[in-house]
Length: 175
Image (cartoon, rainbow, N blue to C red):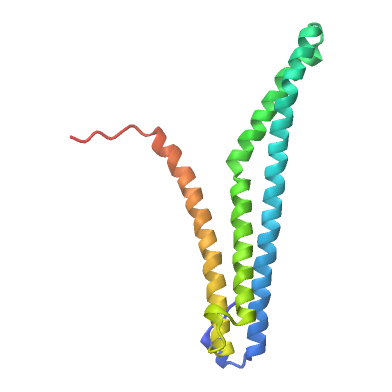
């Protein structure tokens, strides 16, 4: 991980090395966010496509099984396809790939926006600031965006584990 402290700066780390390390970390975060988003979108679309396709084939299998009542394969398939479709729909819900894809896409774009502002020396990175201060602001802004995304993910995970527990607990009667 990137460790940029005032002690490190005074120990001979020059500004160009510091800048390079910070920009490498920013690009690394953008790349990893884009990769995670792409993987999540792929998983989400695959399961949604399977759910829809398997559910759409089911009525056809039912009709075919009625026309061929002695076909054990068609009788079995008319039960198997909707079961697999239900499993795909459940997995899509459990793993939250759509939400992950949106979160990681948003993170990559937000970091890219901060990098653009820094490169153009606009907004909170304006030309009135020294390069050192502008770099500090970039690192802090990107880190805050990353930590905010982790906190959102964490809150979603906790809400998911707490909600079923609350639903299972008996109601509290005051009085």
